[in-house]
Image (cartoon, rainbow, N blue to C red; front, top):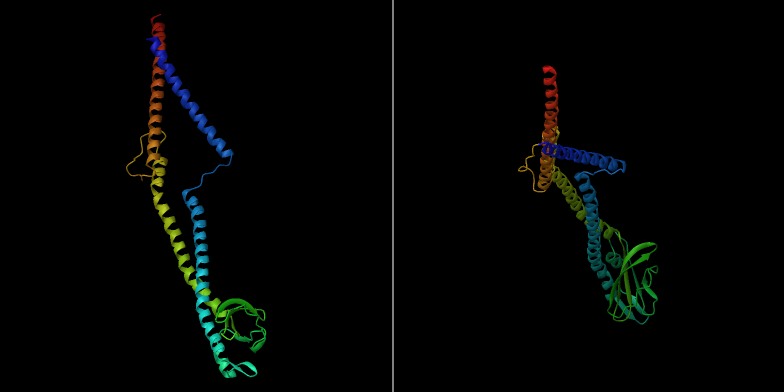
Length: 293
């Protein structure tokens, strides 16, 4: 009987010592993590740090794609309209005894080159490169074959221009150059039309994601409220049925921990009760003997 009691006391003492060691180790770990400056970030902050760069990258990618699409659309549309006066100029070049000449009156030339937003200039060169009509300040055209057409960017008196060049069947070079005001305006209009919806969608995505995370974390706030409202002696398990599937394993693990703590607490209570009983029995015997004497 004495050996059984001693064995029981040792087992209770071992459990108490083990629990105390675990508690001290946990406290030491928390102190060490605090001293190393490790801080936990909230899920909202993690979402923010992931979502903002992703949305910015998405908007920048959409901006770049929209810009190149707008540049292609504006260039294609205005290049076609720039080619028409070049073809008209080439069709009105006449060959006579003095050489090639442009058979268009000044008023007709101005009508062909009229634009309310941009400046248009033209140039006609002989096969040898001599300017026979138009503006001398335009650069030399590329080397084209008869009947070939070309579009390229150039400079005219320090301004960027777009040039349509045509070489007629008789070898003449005809160039019409145009400044880029309406092209740039169209590019920015298309870019703005594409960027505004992208920014709105990115903003809406961020708001929806932020709200969704807040709603998704609501069960965790409920668990926190339950734990804060408990007394230190309340080690009953938490309700697992109202928690989402994502945090159910954490609640299950917490309930297992509470069960282990409850079992350990019960063992400690039994150990203390048994120790108190064993201490009372000798004391009672001594008291009875003292009364008898």
